[in-house]
Image 1 (cartoon, one colour):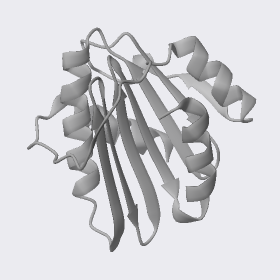
Image 2 (cartoon, rainbow, N blue to C red):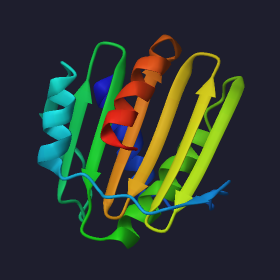
Image 3 (cartoon, helix red, strand yellow):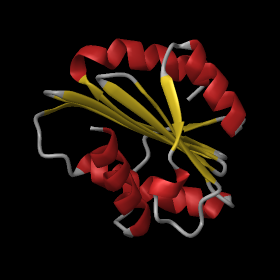
Image 4 (cartoon, rainbow, N blue to C red):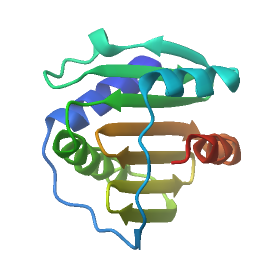
Length: 156
């Protein structure tokens, strides 16, 4: 599941897709540093790996994956907010194209961030951008509440 997730998201970063509509405008948020992401995820008893070398993207400072057996968080630090915004649009497009019964989609944006989540009949998917950082989440539907709690800790 980890390698497929990494490859799908790497592809999403590389391919330019159509824009994503946003439902609401909110305040700004502070982006996480890679070390903060690692520390917070390890505190949740998740395994954290540096997967930067597995992702073939020229403009990537670092990529970290935090995972359990049934869900993964993939965190990217990019050189600028523009690259992260493009990655967000691509990843949100990938999530929107998931062919499964959609139960709910949520979209938010602020001055320096964007958020999109989708709950399907068998999974929960999130992409979040704050400034030059991107966070992708893929989880089994049974883990949705646990993932939401972790997202609150990360302030995503």
